[in-house]
Image (cartoon, rainbow, N blue to C red; front, side, top):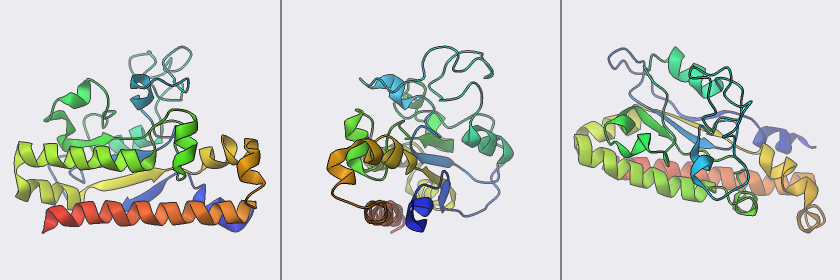
Length: 214
């Protein structure tokens, strides 16, 4: 695999960071996009086979029950939330917990296992593509504005940490098993496509935040 593939397959990318003090937490909100590395239960609410809602998943988590995390316990973003001083973890956006507008004022998780930079990867497994995750993010922004007002919401969006984890599913669960892709593109060519998708995601995410800052 060429160097571009290694870059695009990075597990955790900080999209935008602005460190501010807000009560006990270092930032006002933590917002997550991506794949199974950071999915905390969105796939539990989808008609997909890619789920982690059964044992032994969750056996070492705080409640010792499967939560939709693809892990026996906490995942990286859980430790990130704790280190930033949040009293709870950002809820899966499709979960019952996230229906409470006050609950999402400290962030939300839009990640979906088997998603990737390439929308076709998510569609192959009935997961949530990054483009749809951005649609949910736009909906999330509107809910936050309705709850706390535009000025406070703008501060939250501008100062929140936005995390993105994607890329591995595009290769492992799609490119390497799909003759349509691996015959049409070399690994480097497919990596270039993923990097373009990543760039588009960043640009759209920034535009959504700028629209609220105007």
